Image (cartoon, rainbow, N blue to C red):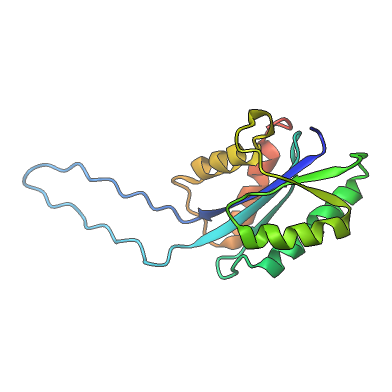
Length: 169
């Protein structure tokens, strides 16, 4: 089970303006609050991990779409990161999300080139539940009410967030 890797992506808003109704007296007028824009500032967080910890986490800008080509580039970066760690995993199995059939089809062709196996989705096996779902939920909850000025400020906040997580998250 230590050689099972998985990936998950999540859109995260980094300007979370919380509108709350103001408390005013009957005879007072409250200050109007501006509405949020139609195009919220968001980035895609892509996390790659094994059973122990997150190995590689990458933030994609809000104007970049996750395509099959980009997914293959992310696979290459993840395998380079695994090789750079020098870990002795033996045969590495990759658990892929079954919701994207085109990504799975391309990944099944690409992963053997890197020496990885594709593990079929284990929907009813709780021992193979990916841990990054919990990570990205914790990330989404931590971003509630945060307002970062720009993407650099968000990158600093995310690096501090990932450093503050326990190793066995």
